[in-house]
Image 1 (cartoon, rainbow, N blue to C red):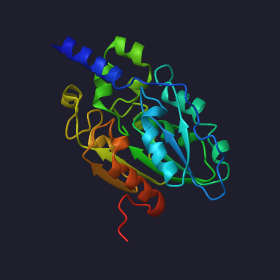
Image 2 (tube, rainbow, N blue to C red):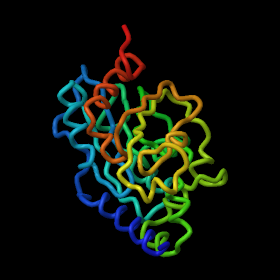
Image 3 (cartoon, rainbow, N blue to C red):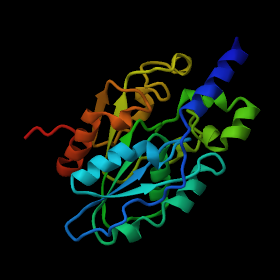
Image 4 (tube, rainbow, N blue to C red):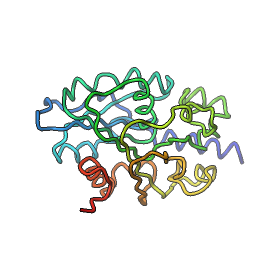
Length: 246
């Protein structure tokens, strides 16, 4: 039974991770003096296409959007961050720079900002981030085949206190977290104690110095397209809170 469950996990990871493209930094036009910039960073085994609807929504609301693409299975978290999160500032020029990250994307940004400063850094929204690791990573990292196929990131997302993700410390920037509480992956959820979104527990998404937290009835991968999540992102950029309670 354990072998069957392991195979199921592998299939589900790859089934949800297809569609990677060579698309790079997005908008063809240059940023205007009146625009603020939003940088989107996708999650593990994904591409910028996964955040395409969110990108279009932000553009429609007047933001200049830069979409980061990276390959997630051949390098460590710090290597991915160093090699892929270094050239967005030239596209944003001297305008305020916000971020929206999904899953692993939030950890990449935390890794990057631990060593680098962004001059006009605005607000950051993390969607479903494994900020304290994931029990799914704990399980997968036990098997040599998964480490070979999925790369070093998996073991770096373990929940133990010595893992890379738990060595990053608390962020020193303004950020809010949006997390889902619905799962369509019963195998992964079986491995995760407490409520989860199918990949990350609600508790492990949180950090004690987060500025705001929003829980929505969405799964890990589909949270990025939820209308209430898009509106919450706009509110956070404008007011510093996910719900505008003026």
